[in-house]
Image 1: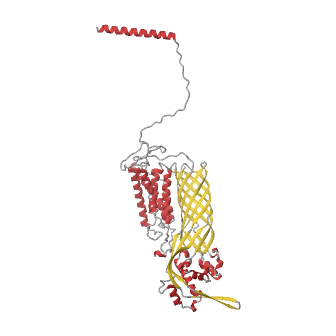
Image 2 (image 1 turned 90 degrees about the vertical axis):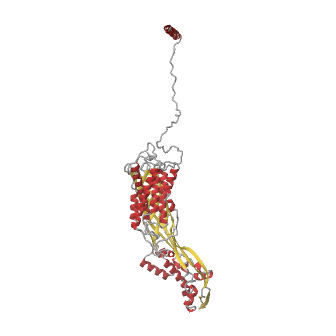
Image 3 (image 1 turned 120 degrees about the horizontal axis):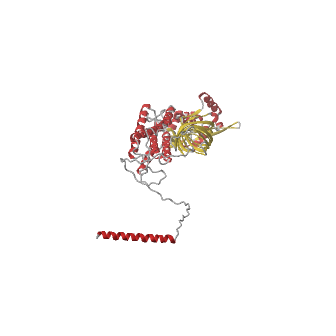
Length: 612
């Protein structure tokens, strides 16, 4: 039975095959097929975006969704991120900054200014005070941690960031405190002997360098600009607050940068390739266009002297007094204001047409603090001249023949000097700086030396504006009223008059503050040049050592007004009397000096540059 079924199946297959073959043969005899190739036209079409799941570091231009990151102890490493070797990222730029601060450390002088503080001959006190620098020193770490908590990835994961930052601050604290309590430099305000180097500035530059390494190198160079800009401002505020000398700030900045580079170098040695999230940005453009912030020390012309010949309206003074003052000037010298080395901060940028020539500009702030006002800041001179003026009321009007001197003094000053027109007098320095702001434009030149180094120079012209130096007078006392009679007589047709004054009467107490001394300068044209050495340590970051020379011819003015307060210390009628006393009236108006001086400035400094 099975055999018969097989025979039937074979017969059926043979029948089907034969039928198919016949049909195919018939078809081939009826139709001739022709193969046609369709015309091919090239067209641009959008390719669907491919997505890959990977843990590699994202490119900087990719849009990222921020996700808060609180995994402080969880280590993670993105694929494709190049590991750092020990000292792979060191620049050593902190060393010249520290050495520059050390070099100008001896340029210090403390002098008597504020008698009210009870620290004569020990310090310079100013009323400029801001507490902002107590907070700006933490700008760098605050921004770094804020970005990190927000999930904006930087160079390192949390464990690596915290370790590197902790090492940086520890190294900085060791250097700063070790030097502070060994050098024992007195602060400008005379408060403590731990001035050099500046801890606030060092802390600020540690934070700025952390921000630079974590986000400036990996995300945007403007993070670095913000960090170093705030750090430089912190250093300047420490000087203006009279808490530090220029040398303290320069050395503190150098220590801050070097400490962070060492901290990160040790972190790289310890973690190797672990905990890295992003590579440094790379820029293939070799054009030297840049934006930079700089900090430096200003040298050059450091004094302004005012003489009798510079006095405006000299004709109002008695010729004999002028001659005597001129003789004293020839013997003792002119009234001289000396300045310390200046603090200089710049913002500068240039666009280069090629590797060699470009155009750009610079905004510069130069703060020169005075180290000697001579008689201008001498409180004894101020008080002495005031007492002399009051004595003139008695001497000039012939009161010796009318009122005994003891009786006059008792009426003017009181039995124990407690009721006088001056019970307390002080000079308070509102600003001990001549601060010059200048904006310049010009040509920039670049000479490449090799892949990473280049020389540069520039030719600039601009305008400078100056904020004046100011010492205020503060006085307390009792208002004095002096009735007087003017007696007229005629002899041989010549009119004569004499004045008799009654004993002074004591009125109410008064307080008065006025501009005792101001020194400033008019705006002027500046000319500048300089030479620089640039080290391009990253494709988009450079450090630059520079020496700039600037020249300007500026008219300086000084106003000395020691008796201005007498407008308040006298009644109106009594002040009119003072204006008519020949030995007093010339001094009631301020002494104004004008002097044109050629200023030659030399600035040595370091720039942090972003290559554009």
